[in-house]
Image (cartoon, rainbow, N blue to C red; front, side, top):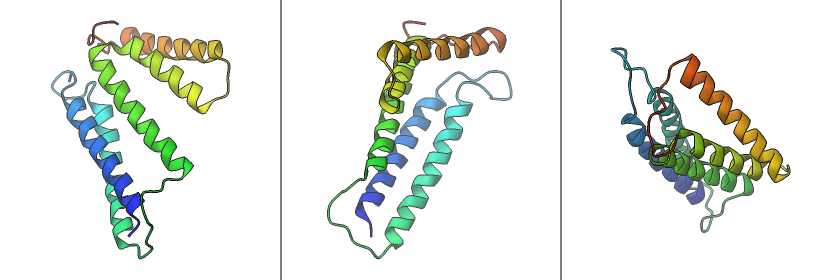
Length: 148
């Protein structure tokens, strides 16, 4: 059994259940039940299914590793999932716009090699476009959190 992969799969499964629990409480519109919780619930389902596959494959494997050793890509995925969890929680309490700018700035800085003002400009432009398209054109409510 590959302990590192089984452990990573368990962590992702836990995050997906936590995301799903938090996402289930988001606003749902109309009789169809489609709303702000639809997309997070779909992502949580995919992450949970992928985690189960990783855990099953790790349990079936005959190769033994000592300790928990993650390669560079696994660490980046783990950090990304953790940052997305923090983003999701901050959206509920702080608000969409501010949380999204901070999250995008962090991800662009983490994965890219641009200057800080370029990262901030991209984060502001992307968040503004999403806010305008969903908030005004598609009438999706962003009325949660302390800030907008």
